[in-house]
Amino acid sequence: MTNQTKIFLTRLMALFFLTALCRCASQTEIKQGQNENQDDQGLATGKTTPNTWDEQGIASPDWQDIPVPVESEAGVVWQLQDLSDDFNYEAKADDKGRDFLSKWDDFYHNQWAGPGLTEWRRDRSYVTDGQLHMWATRKPGSDKINMGCITSKKRVIYPVYIEARAKIMNSTLASNVWLLSPDDTQEIDIVEAYGADYSESAQKDHSYFSKKIHISHHVFIRDPFQDYQPKDAGSWYSNGTTWNRDYHRFGVYWKNPWHLEYYIDGQLVRTVSGKDMIDPFFYTNATRPGDPSVDTRTGLSKEMDIIINTEDQTWRSTPASGLQSETYTPTDNELENIENNTFKVDWIRVYKPVEK
Image (cartoon, rainbow, N blue to C red; front, side, top):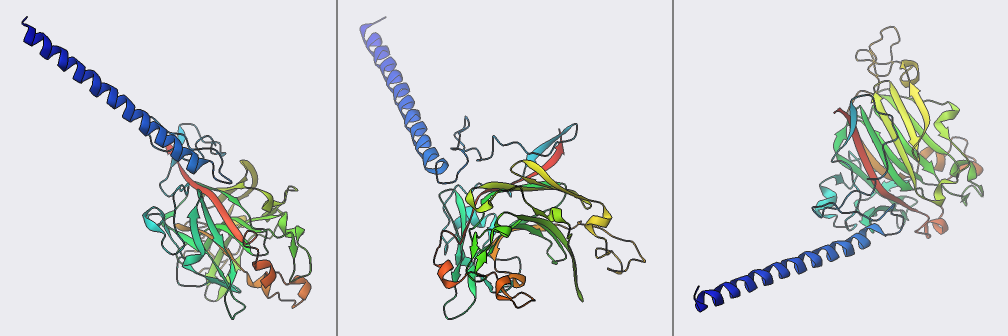
């Protein structure tokens, strides 16, 4: 082997070694950058755990170590659906961006502006620090309250498990995660809560409501309007917790048209099952709705939108009794406390049972 050949081979080996060294350094920088992003996204206030990263450097969802609490049947596994959202991105109130708008519309599922004193606005919701935020303010020159509402761009249908991790507002306004059919005739309330410790409008303690979570469903006839929902004590769940103190998980397993299971913090707290619990008045009849002489009930059988919102409700701000002591709506003074009137959702996940 000539000296020139030896010199050439030596230089070639040195170049190969240098290239490999640069590649290793580059991968180390990438990994460090990923870890920095992990800290930024995962350690925000109220997050469950920091994000972890798979071998491809893709962020895993916040709920990855939290099992679906529903016991699956033999040969069935839970498959995560792309409606799920960990809110690990930024979405401005007036410019939501691609990540948000690929999953959500920042309004109700039709043009209705809301119940009671509610007036939903697109700019009353935003995403930051890994959470969805919705806050309430008084509409200038009005008794109306501007609030946020978002609706999923895809619908869900049974069998499906839906769960949100959220922090209930310390407010007389409702903090809600719910499902509603496009024609407004079928509804499932995953969480509906009124979290204020005290009500200035009623001038009294509000802990009766702040310690309860409303978990229910509705079936409607729209014309003439008729509404059924269960009125049993179990629809107002309480275990001594004051729900505005911390984040909690609220879920529902919509197994079929006649069976609902409600879960809070991973525990089964309510089961509603059977035709006489889901629709005792035949409102879901395929023919002659509301006519008990013909049983063509379909139950909770329609596709539904996922809706996350806050709202003032007529039965609370304008009670039938007209009594001040039963009037629950935030005063201007209470609305000045933005933190108390902000509903925060850490994540929402959707699973369907599929065969292995």
